[in-house]
Length: 346
Image (cartoon, rainbow, N blue to C red; front, side, top):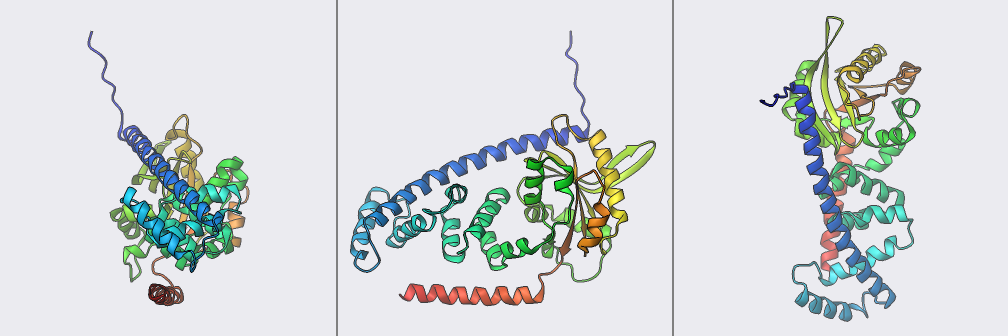
């Protein structure tokens, strides 16, 4: 008897594909973190050794130089220069007295990321914030540097929440959703210099979907744009639909070229109801909606989200980096280059 052939639609296949990709990505991340953790553990213990032997730059330089030469003979493929050995000591001194959560976060970062945090960030809460962002969103060293220079931590602390996640989601999921979704996104990579329509904005985002996903953060898989939903002989289209693997939620994004308006919430609430009824998998969490607009007033958002039982966030986008931020970024970069030159001379 011939076996029955299972036929699945494009939506079902898209979910199978994104789950398979998610498993592979998770495995790769796990391996990378294990490698980083092992390397950092060795560096931590070497730094502890130098600290306990009371070696300081100056009278201890000769010992550290000799140690570097002898270690490199046995481990030529590791970064064991005198400067790196001193960095290991700084690494231990910096985090030895910190709480376990911070130590665990930096322990699995690549060493280059840790060196950047050691030299650029003094506040422990800020270090933990940047470390968690790197882990959750897969920031490269250059992306971390840009985030630090743009004072992302300070900006994020001053932002007012414009979502109802705490009210409608379980506590653990709400906390993580608040970490994943931001209240502002920079779409400068689109190169937009003049007014455009919403469909054109969507078209450009789709054409540069990899850049958009990087801006959203790690964990997003793109399912499609103008995603069709049907109910009661009526058609509805979600501008952009994603799946977030750690939240295990479908994420609907609606694009608006103007300022936030309260009626946008009702439309998004309808989309989320349809997604939860017809698209959400058996083991998935409630779908989440993000309204991405050019501007928002948090009081307008607060009243519009009041009594809404679907998780909805409102975020604004920037098409260009503000002039004052750009100038500050350039000045910081110039000063950083000068500091590096002076340290090399020393």
